[in-house]
Length: 210
Image 1 (cartoon, rainbow, N blue to C red):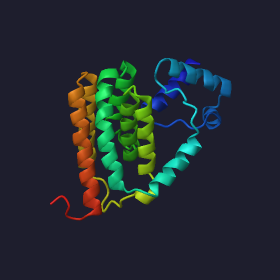
Image 2: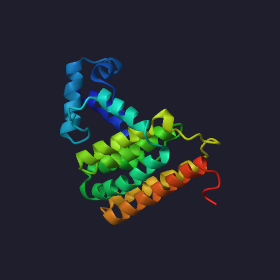
Image 3: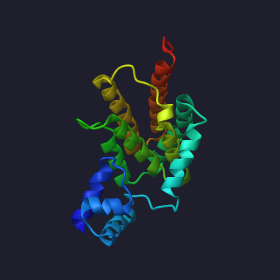
């Protein structure tokens, strides 16, 4: 039981999304009732959100519908409106476990997928806000943004310098949350997302940063 909990905790700390119970039980080689008991331990300790009864499949379909009526700039504009507020709340409400998860996700490990690392960080901040509705809305926004129809081609591969810069921006947000500094957390998140918006605009409209 302890080993199973630690295995799940490690996956969550790395920002891995947990699949459906049946698939997860098969991957871990355990019975489903054992898996449920381990998941309950994590939920009781505040390390895993309690299911809210919403169908993941329905949520995904809703995201696909919305993606057909928007674009990448609208997505980042909505993130700019919401995420600084989530960071402010996280600086006030985050538990020690949630702060640790945010800090771990703020740095891209060697060989890690940069997109997954970025998503894990922002999801951790949203989850730590203590506002379940806002966190759910954020998940929908990111699901819409991940739709292939909204993908803006990257002219060249992401350079290590930009990844380091992004990590520094994430770390500044994480530090403000750790220090219980809501104003700094909100500002740091806003500045980070403004840079993300600039990058999207530069790829959509050449010369927009000049």
